[in-house]
Length: 343
Image (cartoon, rainbow, N blue to C red; front, side, top):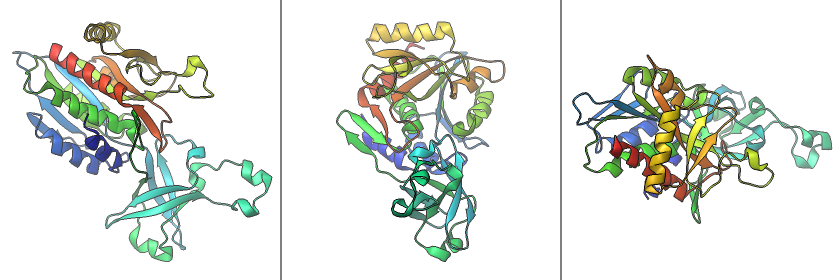
């Protein structure tokens, strides 16, 4: 398993609309694996592997590149940075974080905290309050000089290292650099095998703010089959009822059937299930009450496509401690290789 590539992808900053660093890293891998590599006007990276059929069907794998993060919205006269969020944050996870401020000149290590009194001089009522994201600020340590370096619109991401913990990996941005890794490694797994279908692996932009890059990319490709590749919840942890766990780690990839953005094609879902059982690849059926993923964009583009989701259960999602089981990641890669070889 190419953990080095996954680590590099996770640690490369790229929030919605600012995915160019991630795209450049993916492109280094993609040019060795695909027949065509282009970038569209939304910044999504389109990678095409030609099929051997005379009129091949188009299979599209959608892998979003963006991570949740922030843009600088204001720099105070004292040099403190205020932010606007890109993606869904639980503010309880934002306290006392190290962040990376990505400017046009350099990347600045900094810290993020909420405004207000620290613990030694706060009241019990103060300590019960959960600040909203716009109440947090970033301190670069530069003081007033920050105004000379940081501009409104600069990207800010969490700054935490990638870790291997036993059979698991932990990182910020596993949502959705997992999918970027799977898009690369699934095609690498084909080797010189020539598929009948034309395979489009598209590394999309701005998923975390509404599937934006996937919508335009899918309209361009007009796929017959759309496979949304993403993380999903693994709430197999204390305090979560069994019926809300979504997936359990170590039980295989997730065959994603429904969320608030789409309902997977039934026949296509059963085709994946049958293939997984035939190949003895562990899987679990998954649904989410809310949330969405790029498979919905493929399903709804132009005249429509049959779509399904292939997902990897992730603990502590949308935090800096996102955690996945290596065997689940391997299962997701194996089912994608098996499906592409069969088509």
